[in-house]
Length: 337
Image 1: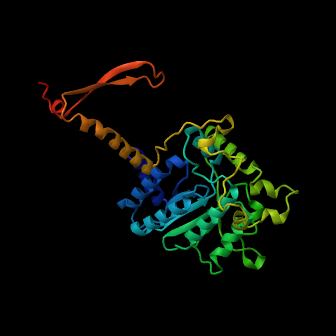
Image 2 (image 1 turned 60 degrees about the vertical axis):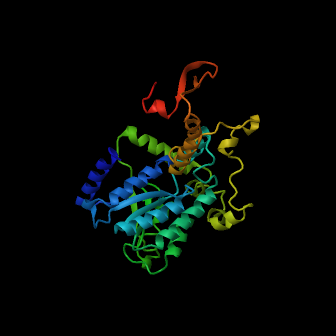
Image 3 (image 1 turned 180 degrees about the vertical axis):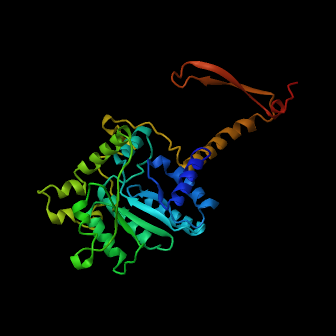
């Protein structure tokens, strides 16, 4: 907050000067909370008062996306900004899955089935459309079924500034040719913002590779629409209906082992880790440490010196690195007599 926020504020002030909207983009799950902290401080910056160009990107594949929107809507109302919210399905799914497994977390931060991400996207879209005074929704999608659902969800009484669609330059052109344009020409008369990455070859290459991975996946709409063997009815299946057909409801993907069961085939549990980016986890860890340490000092209250505590090498537990004496209140106060 001390180093990044001043740079972010300066960028936002420049954006306001040139009447350009600025969105804090979505990154990995463990960066979400600090991004929200930055957003909140930005919304209460005096130099940005009354400006509606502040935005945030929410990834629907994150299981907490629906509740993040509650917080953002409340922030918009508290700060008296109409915030832009760019809703995407997600960009780092494979990384999130692998990172949670490597770290031995309790669960994944993202849905393991694409159909649940699609349902989450529609639920988030409905929530955004339900707060028009606080939110300007920006729906980034190349999925025709998702787009049609939002179009009907928003209703026929469209007004300029109610919401917009977004697509990547060079993608979804056939789809959005049916969206923009006048109704007399059979179009939907809804706006679409085209966005494109800007930068050097080195910085853009990773972006391009990620897009290829996303859109080349078998479950991707962009991939399936180009596959003549995929039936149209299958292509536009209602994700809610498909999700409800799973038993039990919300069942995770059976071919993606939970982080703790990563080595189930070897009949052993994965090493357990802690999500140190989660403020609730940090609070519970702090409380557990206090409970563990307090009895040691309570036992030392009436003693001059406790037994020595052996400090072991964490890599080689048989190696003693040193010994730490546990002392009582008298020694802490400086009375060494």
